Structure formats: C-alpha cells, structure tokens
Image 1: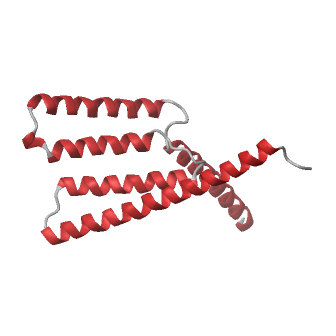
Image 2: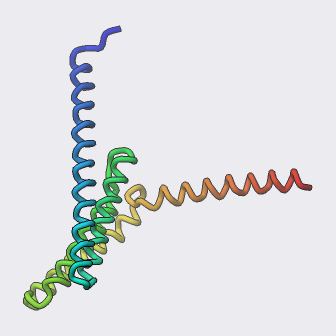
Image 3: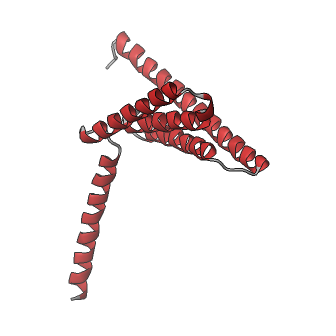
Length: 158
C-alpha cells in the first residue's frame, strides 16, 4: 500500500528535523563541555574560585541536564530547567556586577529573581510541569518491586 505524497513529504520532513535537532544538541553539548574546561582552566590559572565561577559551572551543568532531558525524553522540555537556569544566570549577573549597578537596578534585578522563583514554585504545583514527578513515580515503582522481591525471598526462606 502506497502512502499519499503528503504523508511521504511529512515523514521526510520529520526525519530531517530530527537530524537537525540531534546536530544542534551535539553542538550545544560540545560547546558546553569546552566552556566547562575553559572555566576550569581559568580557575586553575588564576588560583581563585569565586561564587561567580561556581554559578557559571552550575549553569553549564543545568544546560547539559536540559540537553539530556530533551534528548532522552520525549523531545520536550519541562518548565523547571530553563527557569532554574534563568534564576542562576540573573543571580550570577547580580553578583558579578554588584559594584557597577545602581541601587535601582539591583532592586529591579532582585525583583526579577523573585518573580522567576515564584514562577518556579507555581510550576511545581501544576501537574506535569515538574521534572521530579517522573522520578517519584520511578522510585515508587522501584519500592514496590523491592517489596515484592523481599516478600518472595522471605516466603522461600520460611
């Protein structure tokens, strides 16, 4: 049975998009890995480790987490990861530029962090938007399996 022309075009288009997405994810991963190494080299070379350095490394880890989540998941991102990245990025900006900012700008930046944090808390309340729900589900399934195995093992011993 032959597919209609539009279905064939759609299949080829989806395949091309998957290839482009995979390529972009690889570029992001390699670029992030290079940035981690460069930041590590800078810290080693300057022999100082500041809060801004640690926050930058945390940002890189979150970016890699987002790539992993997208690549290994259902090709969609939960709201939590970009919000966490944004909160850390704005906090890092505030920490690095503190002495160059006016008090009004510091207040506005702090308010933006507060708004982002509230958004993160709200996303935790909305079912399906938080990453930890699947982890909780996996953990409860693992606990049930462990309980069954333990019960079966106890029956075999007794």
